Length: 136
Image (tube, rainbow, N blue to C red; front, side, top):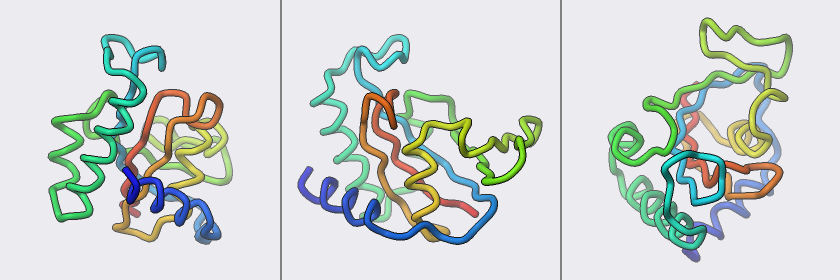
């Protein structure tokens, strides 16, 4: 978990990338009490699982396959986010302010193809840990 926590801090310290719209795929690791039905793992178990999955991804594992097998959200978990306008729900593009704050905070700090993690936070990431890959 040490590497996970170190990488979270490193990404959070970066400036945001200049882009009006981005596309990300995420793997949600929730815990009991985070508002996701059927999840029974503790907060500590969720953080440990996030660290394990993140290490696999950093080691070259197929991100989409891990999302499909492990997410507590719906696969494929791909969302567009835009800084301007109201988005386009038909194309699965949402205004940044309409998404969980940490989701955009990490997404805009990643380069295309890079993976980062939004840690659980009761206000900024209330559903759990989001392992995020920037696609566009």
